[in-house]
Length: 143
Image (tube, rainbow, N blue to C red; front, side):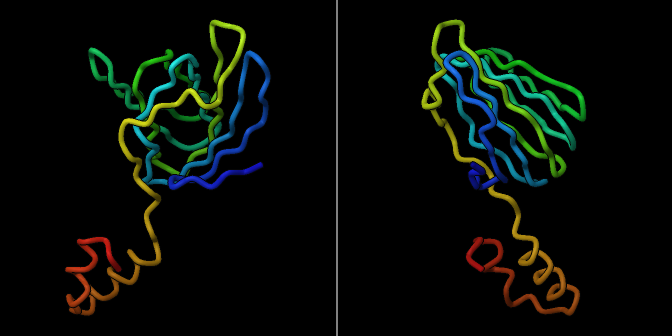
């Protein structure tokens, strides 16, 4: 089943007692929430596109992954996915214990939804035509 997310889609490919595999497709310019998993380790493998993983631990780190590259995020490390390009990736979750709990996620901050390209195009056209009347609403995100 494909699940819609603010940043794209997620599709569960496998849920077993010790491993879970999700296929994620992200839209350029969007990002997942900042979150951590209490017990699951999270392996990202990029199938296509460019995905940036931000890790918030003692030393904040950013890893930029392209096709064929992977990164392991250990359990309890806050992280987020940022989609530099439209991207297709696998997320593999596993634990050191017997069970994978798909609900062990703790969200720490909101994500960034995919940009509204139609709204952006309308704003660019209005700006090019010298019409600045909608700029205040655009900056508030209310259009």
